[in-house]
Length: 290
Image (cartoon, rainbow, N blue to C red):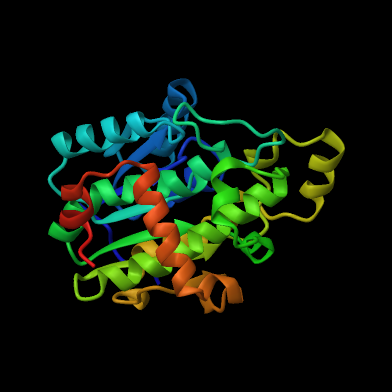
């Protein structure tokens, strides 16, 4: 069961295609004010028009941000706060799977930078607004691929021994570790953080893979509309009001991998993430008290 989201402000990252676009559409149909965070303006505007038309909801905003750039994330957070005085739901959805190792402008392996640090920095910069708007929700799109991740945070940052799936799996393990640590730090704030496996979804995530492999993946995957259901459920359903620090699949709580429950590793990842995003003392303290 989904609740009426009329007037609630929701950010969906990676909203121009795939699961992100279907999540934005689902929330728009529930009446939410949806802020689509997209990297590409042309694709973003096309998706925005489509969502407005299909939902009959005109309160769909497009904001441009490159989650591989910490400067761009900071600019987005600042601009968002100038436009909005509340944030009810943050859905960290955008992700990449890259065949070749590369580094961002900040000198960090790109998959880790976008898939984990993008979640981390955006969430940290918006936490004060989420707390002011409580009860509010943070939804992190992870993946069952996290079960193949290996706990080696130093290698995650540099992309040592890089492989496309390995880096992706590690970044998804980082998503789950981050969610659990964030949830622990949010206890008592009425802001909740949960993560999910959307299912084996055929999306643009796989567009960099060889054509034959893309064709094989298409045979065993579900569509983005089904893949978005758990994200929409965690963002809107009264059934999960107050639920915090859990991993979901098919709209049900499930156990994640043993490594994902390593609290020491989660704290270390948090500390490394703070260092890599160069958070000020005020940002560290004011936005997420320990």
